Each structure stands twice: as C-alpha cells, then as structure tokens.
Length: 610
Image (cartoon, rainbow, N blue to C red; front, side):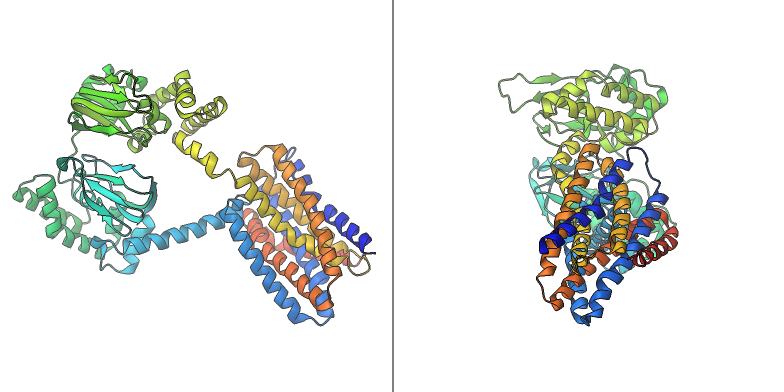
C-alpha cells in the first residue's frame, strides 16, 4: 500500500511540474507579454490559495489540530524566508523581475543607511540636521577600489569628495617625494577642500586596502546647498574658517589678499544661491593641444576630427609636469587615463620581462591607449625618462565626450574593430578568441546605442564573480517548488486520494513561473538547452520530493501530520506572497485581482468533480 501511495505521489509530482519544461518550450514559439504572464501567474496563485485552504488547512482543522497547524505554518514561512534570502544573495534573485526589484530596493535602503552613517561623521558636515545629511547621502554614489589603486592624482580637477565606508587610504604629496603624510580610515573624509574651492588636487590619494568609498560630486553638493539653507550657512562658515585659507596658502601658494578675495566672493555667491568659481584654475595648455592635435601619433582617434570636436577634447585635457624618475602607472594598475606627451620622454617597461628593452615614447605620441579604450589593466609600467609635460585625458571625461562627438565615436568604433584590439586582449589579458570577439561586439553595440564602452577588466572578473549565479537561480526555483511537492505528498495519504484542485493549481502556477523565469534566464546569457535541462530536472525532483513527502507524512501521528502540513502550507503561502503575487502585480498591475479570483474559483470548482 505504501509503495503504491509513494508511486502515486511521484506521478502526481511529475504531472504538476511537467508544466515547467512546457513553459520553457513555449518560449521557443511565443514570447509572452508581461500582461499575459501576470494573468497566468495570478490565476495560478489564486488556484493554489484555494487548494491549500481546502486540501491542507481544511483537513488539519477537521482533525482539531489548529495549534499544530499554526505552529507549522509559522515554521514553514520562516524557513522559506531564511533559505530564500540565502539563495537570493548568491544570485538566485535573478530568476524573476520582482525578486530583482525587491533585491535592489533592499540594497538601496542598506546603501542609504550606510551612507548616512558615514556622512554624519564627516567633520565639515557635523552639526547639520539629520534630514539635510540624509538628502546628501541620497545623492552619494559608491566606489570600490583595490589595494594600490589611485583614487585621484595631484593637479586633477577636484570634482568630488570622498568618505571612507570601509578600508584605508593614504594621501601623498609630490613635494614630500610621495611619502604618506596622512592615513585615513572608515568615517574619514578627503578631497573636500578641492571640491569646495574648485582648486586642482594637491595630493595623491591611494588605497592601501580594498576600500569602499562614498562619493559626492560637486554638482550633488551644489544641488544640496540650493535646497538646504542650513547646509548653505554651514558651508559659508566653513569657507570663512581657517582650514580653507590654510589649504589655499600652503598647497596652492596664493597670496593672503587673493585668498580673502576668493573667500568673500564665494560666501556672497552661496548666499545668492550660486557657488563661486574655482580659486585656482586647472592647467590645460589648451591652445597648444589644438595646434598639435593633427600630429598626435600611436593612437588614430584624433585624426581628421572637425574643429568643434578638437575644441571639445581640448576643454577636458589636463596638462601636468613630471620630473625624471617619476612613475606614471604600474603594471596591473587600473587604466583610467590616456597620456599624450607634449614634450619630454616616457619609458614603458614590462616588469615581467626584465630583459626586454623599454619602449620609448616621445613628443606628440600617445601611450596607454589599448588599456584605456578597453578598460583593461595596464600590462606595463610607465616611467618618466626626462622632465616631461604631458596631457592627460581621464576615462570619465572621455566617456562624456563620446556622447556629443559623433566623429570621435565613429573613430572609436573603427578602432575597436581592428585586429590589434582583439590581439591585445588575447595576448596581454588571456582572453580566448571567443571572449575577445564577444567583448568587441558588446562594446560596438553599446557605442551604437549611446552607452559606455564596457570594461574588459570588469568582464573578466564578472565571469568569476557570477559563475555560481545559474546554480543559485536553479536553487531559488527549486526552493519555490519544494513546498508544492510536500503538499502533493500530504494529499495522497487519505486512501491514495489526490485532489484535482491541488494538481490543477500547481500545474497552472508552474507554467507561468517557467514562462516568465525562462525569458529572464535567457537574458542572463543561458542557452535554451541549459534552461530546458534545469526545468526538466526540477520536474523530476518535484516528483521525488512528493514521494518523499508521502513517506514522511505516512508514518507520522495525526498531530505531526498536521504540523508537517502546516510547514508545507506556510512555506507555500510565503512563496506565493513573496514571489508569485509581487511578480504578477509588477508585470500586470490591477489585472491581478480579478485573475487571482478566477483561479481561486476554478480550483474550488475542481473540488466539485471529486
């Protein structure tokens, strides 16, 4: 008898879950609209609710085991909640649009809370009302840097300030032979003097550990000042204080009367609702760059550009002077700058091949171009071989430039299609031919749609970071299905009887689940065959779990049966509330109500056929 009940449970489990691979197969001939998925998913959810109420909750109440049922429901709901969080944090949230949205919303709330905690400790923001700091925290963005990465360099435009959330940063000055003169940790702010005064950076900021930063741009600060009289007044007091004057006198060698003039002008501007101009201008050698732009070699992007695009590039270049022996970047350092020599000489050295002769770069030549355009890390180190003036173009400025310079964008597109780029990724960054081609196509497509060029370094790391995401997605969907399987196991105990309403509800809920999730999984880059295999394996596992459920329920006392029914019902109800109904409402809106009601009534109708 037990064997026949177990086999029946297994067969019913397969029947209820065969709609999983069926939903995947459907995507080969039909891509459902969000509205269609919402209708089907809400209908299935309503049917499940009716089936649970009648087949599990109702049977337990008939036995008089309410408290066992209630305890089981709470335990099942909590168990599903904990396991669901674990799976989601490993990438399982990607299985549905609603779980993606909820995951991102939770991360956003956590991010805001951390940003607020960090910003309120910043010395120049101390004493401000909490709502003002929260407003500024909401405008902050996160930046993660690795050990040894340079956050900014001296003479850079100061367009943002930073607060350390975790990690450590050293500030170094060239006038002190790059020796650290300040070590900062969590809660410390830096870069704010340059951001407030508009003067170029006076130090280098280097991460000495893996570091997470909050970044507030000068534009975000300006908007916050405009909307907050308290912040405006606080900023005026800070500018009038001794720290700003000492910074301008010490690091930028302004005269006291120049400092006083700028401070007065800045305070007056803030009170009128406008931030003051820069206390010290960024050195660009703009006119010289325009004059030599057509002679720049080793990088074909700047040739034959219209004058307005040359002028636009000249507006973002930064001119810097470096002494002989200085290192501009190291091998394996993030490549976020392009270098053009105005006068002088730079040697490119490969530390991994010490016998290889250094490559010498001279006047009007570009270096760092391959790594800059692909976003890969530098494969060589660059050392100044003679006192040198050079122009620097930062990646963030270049990306902005591409959006408004169509000819430059076309040059970049042509450059990406050269064999040299793919060869560089294959030989210097160990990309296989397929991955190098894939990156190139993605970069060109991004350019064509007005997006940014993807980072090859990020792509390489993401392959490792998200290698377990497909497994997490599979586990997440399995987690959704386990309660269903145990419900089937529980329903066959009474003389091998199986509820039509339960099987109909499960079948109808599984189909849109597979339909919706299969589309999302394909968008994550999984092949159709892989998705179909995952759903088919889940169908088989549902049958196995149903059989196991029948065995577990069959040998238990009635009170324990009610408890186990409650666990299964609680887990399933939590799953419906957390994943099915939010997904349906997200995709279909108000149609969910009537569709759920229809599913509920249809499941009850099936009970009349038994």
